[in-house]
Length: 110
Length: 114
Image (cartoon, rainbow over all chains, first blue to last red):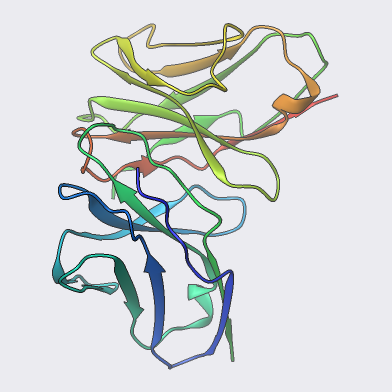
């Protein structure tokens, strides 16, 4: 599975858009990109998943360039409750397991 | 929204004791997983389970660990003889399908081995 690299931490203020970029240089052709969110002492929660171009749901957008070596999770107008750790994962059709890295700790300030 | 539940929320046990962690999956889900997270560290995959058998397991999941779905509803993780280093948060996750399907995580069981 492709290794992922993302910033250790980010700070933002309420109402701002937050973009978290993840690099996955060794992504394989059939791999897909998934983002999870984790609050302290809780299980991870699925946010969004994509293969290429742009995916949007009610929570976030995911931008994947043509070479797929990186992806960007975009959180529009964050609130204090978006303070959490965000994980970028590369998934493969060869395995069911999720491989979590250290994630990006997002702190949202009032 | 359907959710995965886990019991107990916190388990304290002495080294060498057996523990059983329980999970109730979302009702129509077919794939089940256990992960653990040692305090301050990454979430680590332990095992995946489908059609009443283990489909994949990690190096962490040694002979001290076992999983089963005894009654068709609960999904359990047993640690036969706990060690201090087994202290962690254990998360059950379930999904409707394999691979690219979203995994739904439970709230976790905090296991403390003394």
